[in-house]
Image 1: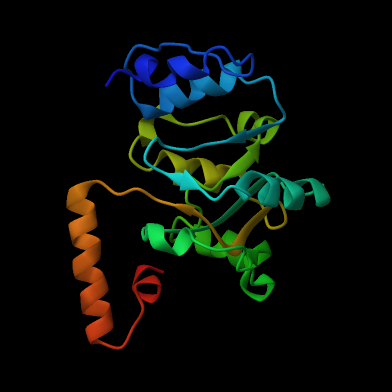
Image 2: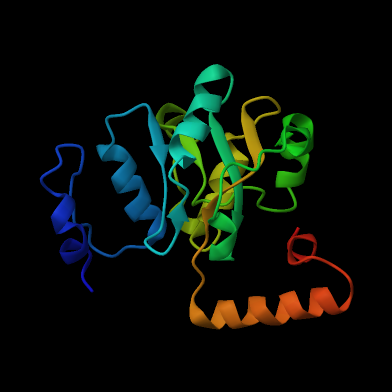
Length: 189
């Protein structure tokens, strides 16, 4: 389905702008979108991802309480059923500071569908690099994150929709993990 048909019902909302960009890769499209943003913060989401109703309030509250933060994210799960219920917050296992900065060199610690960042920080980092399509988010986070400006909260706030072939792979990985006495989350980390 063409995107315009999907968003037409939102076009009466003055906060929504529809801007068609010729296909030139995900990074160019994201940079075009960022250039149109007039707000201080940007939250990114794919059409097959779902946020818990309190996702934005929860992360924005944390972001606004700490002036040093430029980027914040949370946990995500591929199991839609885990989105039921209230906040299951665990402050003791949040990832930030030097530990996050170090781990980011080896693994993408943020899931793009949970991230909220300051527009100014993205612009200062140079935006998305078109040469990095495929790992554009990870590259941007690595350019943005210093030792004290980022936080990944250990709180599940989103469901990450997987294409059918990835979902089958996740089911296999989940069964394999269980057969070895592990949780899928442990295998994926």
